[in-house]
Image (cartoon, rainbow, N blue to C red):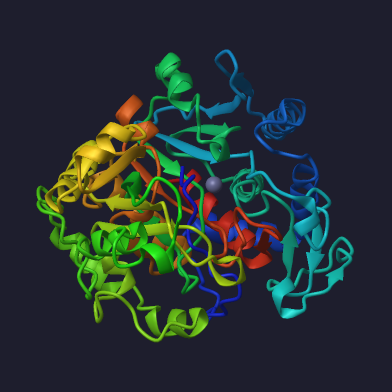
Length: 505
Ligand SMILES: [Zn+2]
């Protein structure tokens, strides 16, 4: 999941708080075990990170899958590589617990975002330990000798370090810790490690649909993505949907001399600007008719969770050089639970020293609308198109011909793009309440968001009908999807304790 980028704050340094002492026995056992095995845990992590993991690189993807299969095997779990023609395999494993009445599926993905090695400070598949963040002048250091403790603020740099190989390593270390402490599992456990999430999971639903029994369970824990910027544990119960459009409006057939034709030939850049400003008011409210219709309001628990989420606004504003925010004073945690309309980019002719004294021929904007539960992607695109019509435009779904442009004063070409419906489950579901309790017993008070700001498919829900909650472990400033991706060592340690608690719930 979460294959639409999160906004990540590369250099943010928010208060880390104190190390929480878990009340959960498995989390405590995991802490003790980890303190005695830091180097071997990191060594296994480094071996996994050293295998290139771009989804299109079939040979290395297979090496990753085989390596993870061996990791399972070492823990006494029989691995299976599950695939459909043309797909990268899902590495699957399972622990059957006698007498268990519940099955928990833990999901992570082992592939990573494509990259350009030239942008990286150290090669992306040669994991490097730094004594702090690269952006804060962190230097590459050698691994501590076996038995010597890691500084929890050190960071491991490699593609996939945070997104999303860390949870796989955390699960394995947690399994070792549980075994070493003689603790027992109470639920049946299944592990599903996907190999093409960053390529948009083209086959994941097919793989699930073809293996319903295998992947069936009572709750799906998606171990992917970053923690809250406050560094508190985050739990997310859905995703926003998305509807994107490309919008082009037209002036003259070709660019015209602005002196000879200005005041006479319509300027498409100006037309586009007017059209776009008709869509949103100065406070950030979308003005498209019926845009907010049908939205399912937040429940009492969801409202409370949003109200209790730490307000990172002031720090984020400083970090991002923002003198104001939209929809003030409402906070970010609330605003991701409502839909948005965003201009991704605009283009018309050329600017700066590339500019000419012309009236442009066309102007284009790409727009994304993020949707929340109760909205539908197609319907939202329809409402957008209807709004453009209402501003006097003749709307076409293909490049307009001369005839069309001659017979209408204003013509807009709209191409529909990515469409995905939103999903959100109630955090009051009994199984989610169990997850929340367990996570909090390992990690302390959590930040709960009804839905993430980003968009992701609801594969488990749609295909298998399993309720899904996102349980990330990565640091918020992990440079996920970009160069110099990294994992803060403390996040790995916390992740192991979290997984130990979940594996024994
Ligand atoms: Zn991911």
